Length: 482
Image (cartoon, rainbow, N blue to C red; front, side):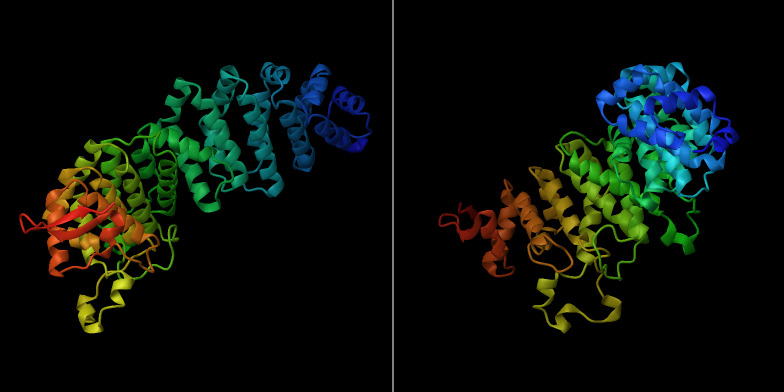
């Protein structure tokens, strides 16, 4: 950078001298690049800390308030980021010199409808603060008090993944170690920031897991999912039937997708409560009313349709919730008609493809008014069977209720291959085993039908059972063959 530009930007002479002499260079631009490279390792950071370069960089940032200085702003922030990467001397000096206010001012001075260089500045500024936040509670509180909630919210509304990731890192790191700051995060103001971050991620994605960590902390470890889900709605009137298909938003679908992924990854760590499960059931019931079950889905989740994705991800959340050892949660779901709804949906679906191929068109029914429903996404039938299988595991009352609702044969029919439902056969066998294991009445029903030829269940052998006639009682029964 030449002398004229230095004067135009009003860069203090002592700052220029410090940067040039330390880097042994002839321009500020070159000095910043050399010092950034030097500060990439511990030795270099320690050496620069002893020379007080951090103070010079903060002064430089305060003088670079023009759009023509974007390039130098970015170089300065990258140097500052490196200087504060695990170097306690620089991290502490940053706080003493009110560095949070300086960096916050840089962020606020950037036009948020700017070009890529402007977003690069915001990202680099957030990375500086992220490195500072790792130094401890004092540093985290300084960041929080300066940026929460207004600056955080302003950045969260930028629909760019390169700003969303470091923003979420700052929020998570600052709030995770402080019950006071986490309580603030869980207010409407804080949840609004998370909601905007979810909207951003639903549009542009994310590269790191900081947002998922925030969702895990607030929605699964704590109970703020319902508030956040409501914030992501478009407030469409419930009586507006023309907009019924648009009742759910892509952001709500994306939130459910993240919750489903987190729960599946941390199934043994996170245990869902009754209120959460019933709220998800309510979402699923609403989605069932919205989704068109006469249009065959061509894709698995996510499909790109908000309503179908909400249907699918709410079902997978319930699947994994029911896989946990919580009879209270499962009983509450069943009391609300969950099992009835699943069996009804399964009955209304067309038969699996491997069964349909063995049935003539007349048997299968071809009258338009009797056309069965189809899976709105690939895997819908499998997910229903998986939920029932999880609910039935070592729960006699659930096994009995399936039998009493004439669901045994229906579920045994799912132990087959289906083009629209990968792994249906495996989940079907799992479900059948859980329905029959330890339940003499269910075994008797299936054995009688098998012996009478009313139903052919070749998969019985795969779960270690065979139908035979008891020589003493002359009654059919299932016996173990393993």
